[in-house]
Length: 390
Image (tube, rainbow, N blue to C red; front, side, top):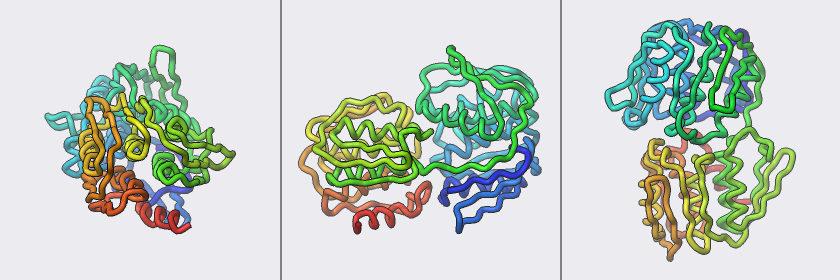
């Protein structure tokens, strides 16, 4: 969206990045992906994509469809966005309704899910309400789009915001490119019209959500793992997972450019994981090896992720012998005598990566469809194997 050239360093080569890059290239943007150095060089379009009629495939990337739906609605053109069968079950209705309030001509399927179709002509109104209880990406997408409008825009957040740290991350990243978003005490996010975004160079932090699996490996084995490139000052909320492990009995060491976890005797905890919900599956697997029960609360929204991450997670934990009581917004896990099993992944990368950690302690665990990790971490199993070898 910016004017000029942007350089993004440490870009991850995975399915989610690939579908976003492919969609942007189909919209006419020039993107030079130098995979040997994990660098993306992007020629900005100044707020209007060159190709104004396109059908875009987003796979199962919720980030891609939510951000592009918002951004394209602020531009000119006719667009259709669709993905895999599971994407057609993932809600986007709240975002579509917010864009309609801003005057955009946007539609989704009758079930409130993709495909999304639009005849984009910018925003003709100044304000909208956006629900925060399904995905923080709805609000993030609108914040990406509103600075592209000629109008001063206000976004009024309604309900409880899930995964809140991602909102501050969005604001921080936008500021690097010259866009300012303000938030007041009434949960109103505002932006002045016609803000000029300028190209910038940006170093992408290592993925704190992916790092959680290696922190968990230290926890369940009683070993020590150091992840470099992250610190207590990371802009990513998922480093809060380390505090959860600390509550369970691990020792955490924060350096200026690393986080180290040393495993200890694990105890069950009662925890609200709304802010770090991408790490729910990781913590649930750690809970298998704790003394006492672990209760995870306030994460109802993860039922709408790549799979239903409450029901399907509960089912796979039971395969390993755990006693699991499922709630609408979470679960209670009681460890029991565990056993090996074939773990179903439901085409969910976090299922595969989390339950692989259980295999560090439980013999005879197999992960079905391990390639689903390609969504965000193609080299996960190679990296996990190298950690074990060391």
